Amino acid sequence: MANRNRRANAPDVDNTIDLVQVDGLVVAKIIKHCHEEGSSAVDVAQGVLLGLVADTRLEVTNCFPFPKNLDENFDEEDYQMEMMRHLRKVNVDHLHVGWYQSTQQGAFLSTQFLESQFTYQTSIEESVVLIYDPLKTKRGFLHLKAYRLTPQAVALYKDNDFGADAIKTHHLSFESLYQEIRLVIHNSHLVNALLCELSEMVPSYEGSQYLDLGTASVLEKHLRSLTDNVDELLQDTNKFNIYQRQVVKQQQEKQKYVQKRNLENTARQARGEAPLPDEDITKVFKPIPVPPRLEPMVLSAQIAAHCQQVSLFCSQALGKLFLSEALQQPQPSQQTVLKGSSKTA
Image 1 (cartoon, rainbow, N blue to C red):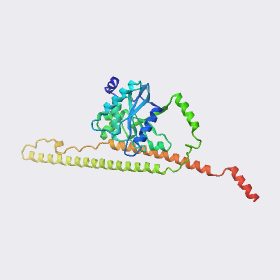
Image 2 (cartoon, rainbow, N blue to C red):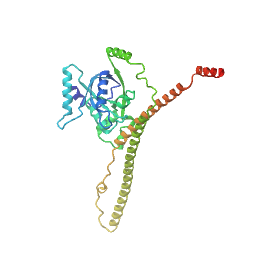
Image 3 (cartoon, rainbow, N blue to C red):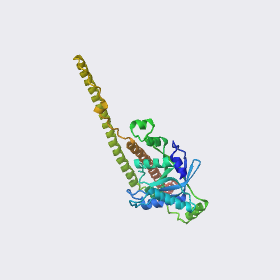
Image 4 (cartoon, rainbow, N blue to C red):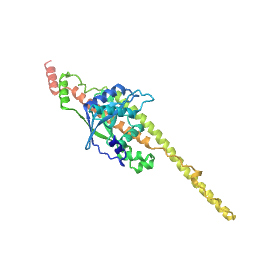
């Protein structure tokens, strides 16, 4: 923990991780936990990642879940410290290197998600977050991704200013809000030998439904989520447009107020009277609060992620359609046989 406290006092957070190596046991634990507690759209399964750092590679060797049913007296930090203390006693890697979370249809981006990752990266410099999607895994595609906040996003959160000017100053956009880190699943040689032996025991027809075209429900869920995010982004855009109109209207009223006071002072000077005392115009016209731009940027990033998933999904579906069409067409040898049989008849 001394090393953790030392990292917390670091002046800047540098992005030093370019590879995340996850043990197969950790992947199995995450899958088991997320399928048990995070398979619905409401429940979210979360847990702690343990491991170590080797140069620019982060090795995740163990994990444990957060308890689901929490009482009022439950202390999350004490629970984590107690779990790591027990793991240390049995000679297991106990260094905290990040956290994991389940998601539904890739909809994991939110302000709470970014705040949690910012807290981890400022206290543990090399920390990452693993995102697992149970629904896509059930479809046959293992969806396990590793993400980190970019240095620009970390600097923005440190300043705690999410206005348009602050975002522009940090050169931040929804595309540079977070970045994906390459992830590799690592197994020991004994585990690989066991997997080879188990693969020989599985019947040949099991797991071979590669041309399944009944995937309209998945695409529909993606498009529904995309539509909801676009509607929310449109509402935030309308709020920002209203703010801009209010600012322009206030500037016009300020100019009219200043011109009116100048005319009054000119008339008073012509009558030989003292001019009106100077008045702080900001007290007369209070500044309009700037709406934060973090939420629209998060929505834009989520929309871009949904569009990427839809594009990937549609390309795979089109590939299956063309492949199934080619398989259904008769081969040249079959055509000659059919022609010969028709002639003899």
